[in-house]
Length: 137
Ligand code: ADP
Ligand code: MG
Image (tube, rainbow, N blue to C red; front, side, top):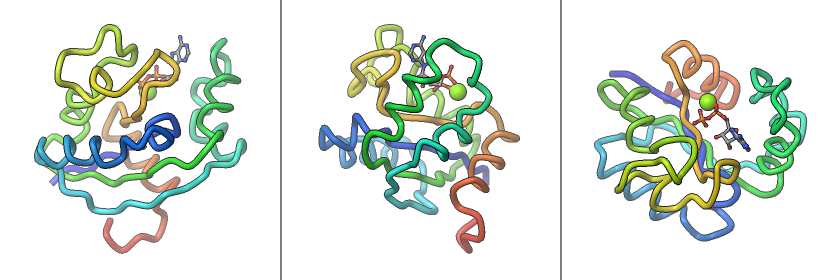
């Protein structure tokens, strides 16, 4: 069974959308294998999104991801990485398909309510970044 890493981002936590997003997650066949709330430091957000450090939106992204608590998740199902990207929807909610999490909850390209790993390799790296030593992995 495959695992992926997901975040319910600070915008969605602030807007009381944790339950709605988790309900859609479970309805899509994911098992929640690990979950915790965290208020990321700027350093943690910078490290997590280091791949984007030269992009013009990097500062805004780090600011946003550390503005309040988020929910960190290890999700499991068959084809979890690709399936979670599908259930989450496009990065820009304006382009996300009807019924996706981002279409339902996100407000903008930057404040887009959820994260999902983009490959199995990155899922393993991202899970290790936040759930190192967790026995559920
Ligand atoms: P995804 O989260 O869909 O994998 P990316 O990896 O390209 O998307 O970008 C990481 C995050 O950076 C996005 O989820 C979003 O929060 C933010 N972001 C991406 N592009 C922009 C942009 N053009 N303007 C503002 N924020 C952005
Ligand atoms: Mg990405």
